[in-house]
Every structure is written in structure tokens, then in C-alpha cells.
Image (cartoon, rainbow, N blue to C red; front, side, top):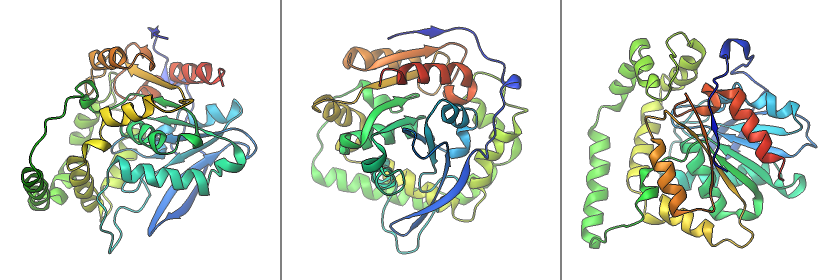
Length: 322
């Protein structure tokens, strides 16, 4: 499947709310985790996984649509984001896609109760997509299908990984930690969360103008202004920078490729995505032709939020196959 959708929907005619569903909490290890849920308990489960800097609120135009089409819809705030805990005293973990995948596995088993309610559909945006496929590589038995909109990490198209001596890697990890502990992240977050700067930063992820989208700005700025936001960001920066190769794109996809009865993966890409350009998606498909790709025109890095009508139609059409 390789389809282009050329007409943009009118967001003014689309009713959605960042406060969709019921707001609930659950504990993963020593972290308090926020999630949203809507739909009938007996319906097949979907879990929505947000991208970097966002939260379950970012699925404001999608969750209730999926629930009215017969799905039980969950939206999880990954640890460090949204209303989930950003920092836990005594925690020694650095946040990366392996950490969030472990969080998601526990969520699927304890909250979604996959063993009782059936395999889950994972839908992710950017970092959420990386978390979704990492989860698939760990526990394919829990997952029916994955929809990634889009997949991050340009490393996906460059599977070659140079080998360095162990002392070099240790020195690199130390310097990365030192850099992010010296970097004044608290000051930087306070600056970026100012109205004009956050608008500029968010615009890079969107094709349409978002200057008047105050709801979108609140989704990003409110968590960024929490007291421990800079600690969460530091943990993410160190964790994602110091990941082993096994936690990066090529290794994850290679592992998924060899899964018996592999759950299918659909990629949804914005044709005007400036953060992860479309040519990377095309290279990815050449490397892994078992992936399926759909492209939406006049859309950037957040197709689910920028063109929700088309996004929702693509998802529902895909899900009819299962």
C-alpha cells in the first residue's frame, strides 16, 4: 500500500478535545503514570502513544472517533511527559525507548489486560512509534498490529554501525552525561516555553499554521512548566544518546523481521514532514519491503493532529483487515 491523500480536511469543522475520555492514574514501579480511556470495555483495545514533548492530549481528534467505531481506546502519557511523573527520587534509570517499552508492556498487561481482552493495536506518533516497535520486538504476543506515524531516527536508513573500542564508548558515555548535567536545561526550557518561542518550535512539526492553535500550545507548555521537567529532559537526553545499538532502529527492525507470524506494521507519513523527510521513508521501505506506507499530502510531522479526518480513515481502513 502506497497511497497519497491530497485534500486537507478543515479542522474548524472537526470537533475534538484534549480532555477526551476519562483521566486516570496507574503506578509503574515507583512512577505515577497518567492515561486516558474511552469506549466500551468489551471492545478491541487500541493504545495511542504520543511523540516527544506531547501527551495523550495530542490525540484530541482521534480517540473518540475510534471509540465510536467500536474500539476501547487508551492514551498513555509516557514517563517524563504529560501528567505522568517526571522524576522519582532514588530512580537511577535514564529514559529511552527501551525504558518506555517496558512501561508500555506493563500497561498492556496490567491496565489493558491483553490476556483477557485480546491483542492490542498500537498507534504511535514519532517517539511513540519508536516505543511501539520496541514493544513489538519485546512482546509480539501482546500486539495485533502497529501503526507508526511516522517512525523517527534517520538511523533506520543507515544500518552500518562502526565498531569502537570499549574505552572509547565509556569515555563517550561519560562526556555525554557531563554535558547534559552542565547544560542549563531548566533555563532553556523556561525560555522555549514562552509563547513566541514555543510557536516557532511547534511550527517546525506542522505544515499548516498553528499560531492560533492555543490548545496545541497548552498541550506542550503546561508539562514543560512543571518543576521537574528539566530533570526529565536531562534523563531523556542522556538515555537516548547513550543507547546501545540493540535499542536503535536497525536492530529493532531486524529483530521484528525475524518474528514468526510477525504482526503487520503500517507507516503513515506527512509528505511535507520537515523533521523526518519523506525520502527517508522511501529508503526505509526499500530496506524493509514488508513494511507498508501511506503518505498524506499537505501534512507535516503530526499527521494524526494536522489531518485527523484522513488519518482516522486510513487507520480504520487498515484495521478492517484484522
